Image (cartoon, rainbow, N blue to C red):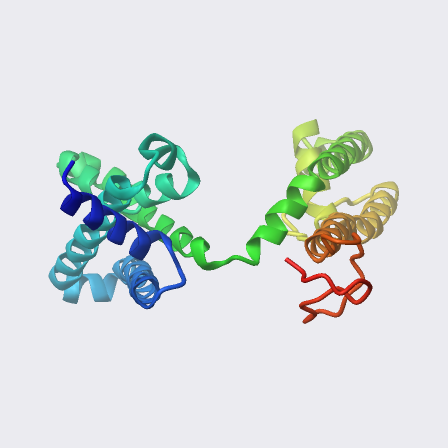
Length: 268
């Protein structure tokens, strides 16, 4: 590989993957604008009046956007050092999903495949995930969810057990004559009631069932706050860990502090 090609790859890699130079910032802004525009195109295509009147224009714009995203994907794949790792990564899959449905639609012609083509075209909304590259604060949430994953799993298991018990009890109390024709129907009602959604398509008619429903509703209000509290506590803990002083280990600092309040060491 010549020195000129190596230099070109290195400059392109810095523009695409770095975010601290003028060229890379301009690239990020242009890419974000293109992502928003492409998602807007997908949404406009679902409006029948607009599709009927401007269908050809939307198709041309969609192909222009797809070609631009294709060049971006090829450039990322060509300049990154570990190509296989990038291709299998979250962002690599999202970048591929941003362009793949449009090309796949070319190989599924015929009226019998129109629904398949339409579903593939709607998969282009995956492009909105490409903006996750600039959501650095989302790292706090991701790390907090990972840290609290076991607690959340235990919580969900308890919720499922409660719904199974309440749903089964409601099936025995109400019976098929009141719409609870199976235990699955009772489980469905229990989940809808506990989540406070309340579709109203099925409701208890007996006094015993109504009392049980009232208990489940009150339980639902209290349960909703549990996962929020778990994740919030982990987010706060993650933020404190990031602000920990490398010198003395203290995490008690003001939000905008650049130096440790205790020993004066520069914070990371």
